[in-house]
Picture 1 (cartoon, rainbow, N blue to C red):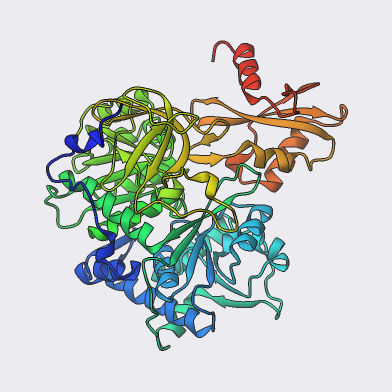
Picture 2: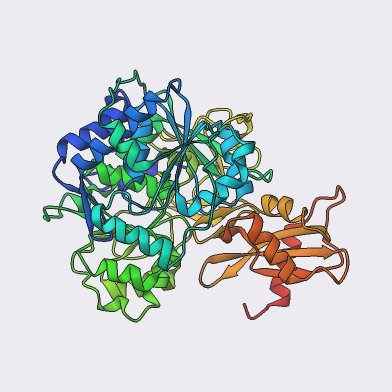
Length: 565
């Protein structure tokens, strides 16, 4: 049998075995502690514009006061649909500060995806950057949204923001036309929220660690994404776990300010957890609104030293593939944290050779605020495991009957800890937990005698595209609405750039159904990373005797048809 918590014996001396989120009365006590400790530290740099922790404190207070003035009852849900711009974090913190629940939304969502999250969460107010207002306009009549706060990318960039907004709107034409001018929509511009909120009274709400702080949506196996309920305790715990784990290196950085590259989107759970980690330690976030622009990203990195660089494997690889990346100064880089998807040994090797800093791989999930397991931050060698459980996280490996397994035996990883969700909104979550309260991750792992965990397989059918969970059932349910599609099935296939890509097998009604029609329909109804990159027409799909599509058979078919891959 597996010894009890073997990983604890392998913790670095400076890492505590447990953390205690109950030292805080609420998540706002944690945030306010950060503002007080680091008031004059720079908190964010975006397009050359710097904001201090004091700036962000004042902005979040203005957002909170304005929200309270709208008369929303405490516990109301407020949606946040923005890329990595300076107003993201003060808006998010302002929502929590006012006593409300935040539900972050992927700005690239189509109308269909946006409508589901807004309705499922019950959001009454939405903060949205105008680049993405068109999707909101398409569905607002079918939601409970009563108030809209419209923001422009450059709204917190002063005079430079005017130039940024002009280039985005007039030169690059990145703001699709929308019309939310109807008097029945209560629309406020973000600068007006800051201006009015600054002069409005703020009533500090009574908050507790048991209250819901976030509704973070994750891919749904039923075809619809699920709202993970994250309490204030879950959030505080993840912040403390992450900070404790990185301490062996961060405690030795002698710089006045520690810069963390924030290229991962803040609406994603991995980046959100990193923002918590960073604020607890007074980091400066180098905000990157569009990391897909690799030349622009490299230019941003050239302007200041960077000490901590979290990313997904595809982003590390994309930078390495650009010949100018190697010319950057990596002398300050101390932690390169890989997460969101499996890191490859080849990319890890190239990263170490180019930067001199090893990639440290870990594992997390939305349901645990992205805190789960990680390799020791002082390790220099890539070992192919997802590391050890973080402080106060317990992991067991079980078989299909729920029995605990021993050393190096493969089974389902189940986790328990103060950062783990209690379940999903509007759903019976009892089957997601074991009888003794461990969350079933659905990931197949084995654990060695030291407590290091090797990820063997993921949730059976989930596709991981550039670190984003994509569930075949959702894509299939959308594509079955496409005219001429009789039946379809989705699998993930290996992809050099994205880790995996979506492939769809389609039974067409006739020859009028073309790949271009399928691609156009997908792009109209789903975020880009969910859209099938590979389409194959077939006359039938392999199914079980009860009619369930056998995706494993399709994976085998793909491998047989593409042996060189």
